[in-house]
Image (cartoon, rainbow, N blue to C red; front, side, top):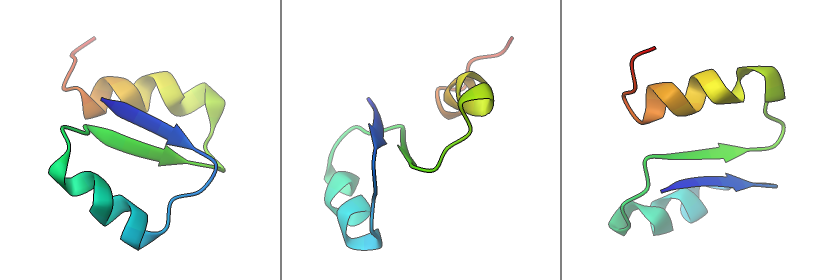
Length: 46
């Protein structure tokens, strides 16, 4: 699972630690880099 959120405080990220979350992307993120970052989070080789 990948989460894209408006904001993610450290305590919110800790709440996700018990879930099968591969990555949390919080604003501001760079849309042009997002696909690459998702690939890295999922260990996809391109």
